[in-house]
Image (tube, rainbow over the protein chains, first blue to last red):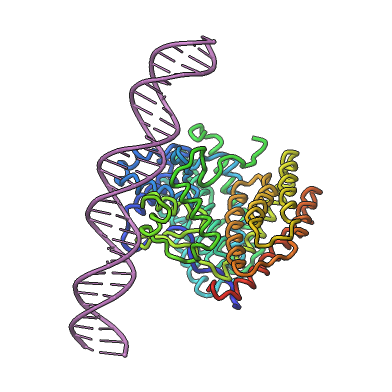
Length: 239
Length: 239
DNA sequence: ATAAACAAAAATATCGACATTTTTAATTTT
DNA sequence: AAAATTAAAAATGTCGATATTTTTGTTTAT
């Protein structure tokens, strides 16, 4: 009973080798919600969507029900499903709560991370850097790659955090943060130099400097918040 | 845009006036999981349970899928559903994370709570006190009432916390905490004097003494942890 | 003009039946 | 005896059809 790290038992839906219709619909729906194809607050009509995603009603309902776990969908008894709504308050809430959880997760991860964690983090950072150094094509399909690798980097950073619950909650908030970012950038293609921030995070994590890590990570999330907040606020389409 | 409190839009499943079969099954399943009728880690066979809960397969699957939101059930593609497993690490993790979230939520709630919040809290405390003062019947059905009112008290305490996400995560962890407590007490009927702790929490909240509140609330959660941890550890049925 | 009552339309919720996959058990092979 | 193979059983995953409820639009009354 020495080590009480809570690493096993992932929460939520777990994929398997062969895909199921539920999982296919779930994955598509998630992407469509995060990308804004399905708009915030929008009613998710089962009858309509089942033909769009090519599944039966029960299957679609199950996929939607599973998305409630990630708070991307709300289910209201007898009134069906809706895409999770957005608001400026919610964005602020997400950012602040993210700082609390993500800083905690990163610090604990640094404190507990072993050599394998270091290697994984270096790999993730390297892959992210490769994309971020190509500032050429802004609206190219590099964006999709960047999004993937950005998630993987942040995931690798907190991977050694012994608290499964903090990791889980952090992950949900990160996804929502991403949604806001992607919704806000649908028209404009803004790009502050995020790479410098990622570099600072990586450096202080590798140096095991938790105070510095907390500082730059907080700054990173706050900066993201400020940019996205302005964009959401000034975007009439996101009312 | 002065007040950015994130109070609207509850996450998860919302009930309505007339009940649905899904919601009925969901409620029963939740209670059966928390009470230990359905054991931790147990496989939830749809074919078997659908007759037990008197619903169709699709309905039961939907109920189970919705319980994934609360992390009471896990869904594994092509391998069905399981009751969330338990472990000593998990219990420790829950308690520690609960302290972080519950203290934060309570402190923010105290800082933001208005008169109506005070009134609600006083009411919840009063109702809880009435049950806690009757130390006579231990194994009576007062237990069910206490459990309800204990939840309501803690809920009332954090009700004015402006962060919807912290409230949501806190609530999930509280439910899991309750499950461990109830599982551990299935044989023995232990009862430390919890009322004193609740009184301290209530008093410091009403006095708006956030430092004291953080202290006694932390103590409350830690004490609960210690008691339950020992019981779970020494209970062979919970291996 | 506003509100209430009602009918038609749409959408949700639900079930039973069936195809596919996984698990279990028995059999054969090394 | 242990491992691999295969067959039977069980369970998951899926769809289409239908009952129930909510929503929408129209008519009627205040």
